[in-house]
Length: 139
Ligand SMILES: [Ca+2]
Ligand SMILES: [Ca+2]
Image 1 (cartoon, rainbow, N blue to C red):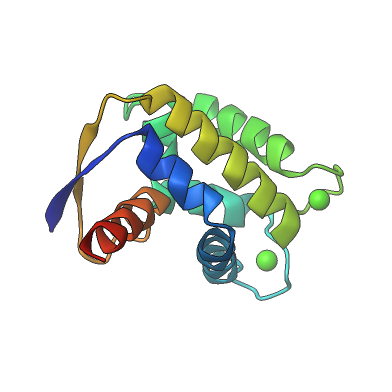
Image 2: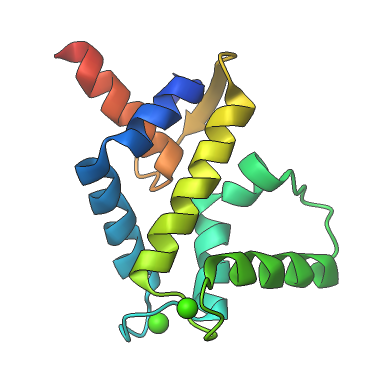
């Protein structure tokens, strides 16, 4: 468990580093594709958002959100990811929407850094972004 400080430029440089970003997103995609059929179903994507904790950081959802509201929210998120509306999210769709989301987070953060408490095994992209920046600063 550690605390990292990130701001918009941390997130942005993570997204801009295409090789690293693609690798991270593809790894996440593979681990989320529970039945290994190469696409994410609605329930797989929902789990993704529950694990990656993007809802709290980006969509401002708090724990008191009623379940039916959450379902509606997850449905609308799924539609955003599913660019061609075929009811499945493939790796490319996932990558593109993750990029949009992270860039929106970066805009939201701007230049005011936030502190995040992270578990050591945290798989979130914000953790990866922070790690990448730490590695760059150490170099
Ligand atoms: Ca799947
Ligand atoms: Ca699709």
